[in-house]
Image (cartoon, rainbow, N blue to C red):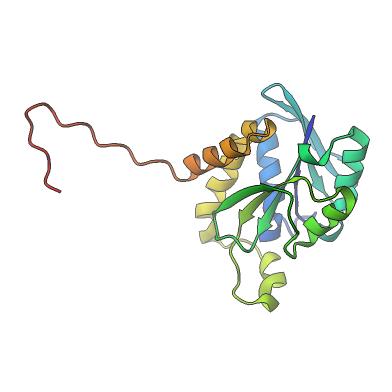
Length: 206
């Protein structure tokens, strides 16, 4: 069994915030693979499903961001899931919009949700970092992440969320390289190759 956590704040007021990109991703995974409906458990919303023969739990902590570890820790302890089988999807201001990186362990880099989870289960879990860009000054960060995505940002946001959901089988199998490669291929597909010239047909000048 594996646990995929999406970070965010509960309630419609925060639903479209940059800080809630983790909620968006986990909800998309649950829809894509027909998980059971989310239900209240472990101070969060929990849904169960199966991806490629692997049983998965999708969790949205509803403790508000700063206490995310209370929910994650409770679920991990109840199901006896070790940190290395937990993936946390969250917003990352130090990545450009539309970029994604995955790593295991590390620091919280000022992210209060990660800091809370580190305190609850230790740092040795997977972090799926979804770039939302930086406002340019430290004092603007809190307001920035609690601001809704602008309409024009949906151009990269919607494909990114859909790609994370489509690539979830790799994440379920702990194939993080395959996961990142699949997401990148969906978000930025390779341009079609030009057909080879017909024999005897002159090539276009370069």
